[in-house]
Length: 366
View: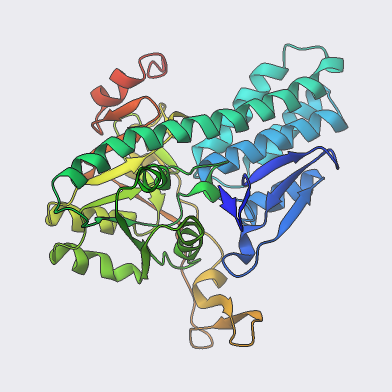
């Protein structure tokens, strides 16, 4: 997507430096910073510290990390070490392990002399695939928005609520939950997007920055406002992303998603989840019982980063001294609360049968 009129991906291969470049998302929405990632430590730090974030983007970043590992040392031992080093960076998003497993399976049979070039080519392929997958998610979600728009008075916007940032900055480009919005906007369908702040890291501010850069009408709201808006008929649909979806359609996403799903269910508001197929974990059935939930540093809950009136970016404490913070980063929404899953192959029910019908080639786990 575009920033100040120039097209960017969230990460890309910089031919001038022969290194990966990323948008350092810790500084958004106040500053737009680009960082070169040149060491294995920097790849790990980029994922852990959320310089890059979002399941698809984490997966693509890990693939480039494996490419660097093979450039440094293409041995079997180092291939295995690099896999384990990157795999431990974040536990919840399944795209990380999906990308690492794909790299290892592709590289292991190759002669060591061929691995560096093959690993870089595969990283490029994974990044390009992600862009195309998300573009197609947008087309499939657009059909749902069109249907809602057709039932509304002419000129009245389709009002969409989204949680966290499942935008192009959480993928390589287009985004998951935002891709249908961008497609609808480009088609001329009036939209109004309610953007949850998404505490504690306020990723909703990144979504607002994205939408504003693209010209999409939106309003930034506190996390607890969604249910109120739904009660008063001000939300036509909810679209969120996901970091891991089970084979039966349970959805793990940023903390607070479950509460939005409950409010949507209680008020008859369609609740959709946009996801690329690599985000489906076919080995997991019960998301609540089986998906590991990352517990992040409590500092994120006790302190808030923002921009002062003078334009400086700083951090302030919002809790009393001595008060401990708890910080589960994700929750799981059971499939019974999900209206449909928007994938690159179409829209399906959040059921084992629905997913298996769209992905018969992937759903067999035995």
